[in-house]
Length: 291
Image (tube, rainbow, N blue to C red; front, side, top):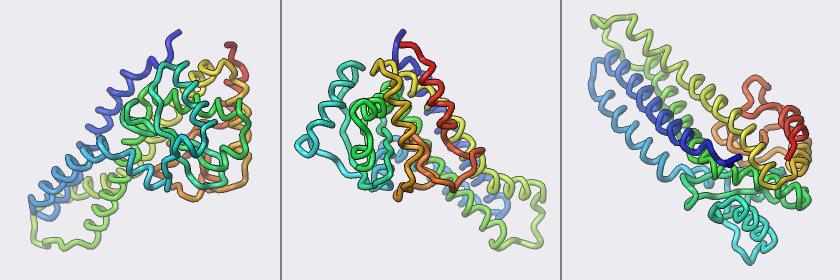
């Protein structure tokens, strides 16, 4: 069996996602420019979509780390953690990622970056304090599998683009309601209505896309991580501790929640809209594995 065989597929999904983003923003710009009878809005939408796509590809990891209030950990600050990550990278055939720390008592972790050379594994102080070595290995192996499969590029870009779509759609819907309309205009009312619906539905579409991508990739990362350590119970026990911990992660929002190994929210979102599969199912799948 070959680990990380989803890399090419995730690269295609990344370009598809960026194309969808481009189309949605241009569509919103077109309908708004038609409704307000000015082509300037469409030109701005084109510029915005191009610039946003460029930023999301090259700097999305920095944006996510900043949003998470993570800071880089040096080798001398935690040699044991660095050696643990290094050993797993050697086993996985991956380059050593940079390691970042989030000062938070809630145990959790995520990986980000656009490729192996720019990859980052971020862990909370709570994770380091509350997990034993085999559990921590399970979590790190899970995050390294995201790097190997190039999930990190897809997930990180999703974070930035979803946020952009929500901002644009919110501005569009407000413009429809509060903008100045020409009462004598012969604009087609149906077109304006479609533009309004796009503005309202775009955030929902973006969120559903985010959920669909995240749920699939978590099962794959669990399996690959367990195969890397040859000890599925380590990750299963870690997931139990993370999900049962009462602490709420402070520096997190709806845009970044899907990046973490387990949902960072505590009782704030309904299961139907969670970005992760049910933790019980993930644990059962791990404990049913034979390695």
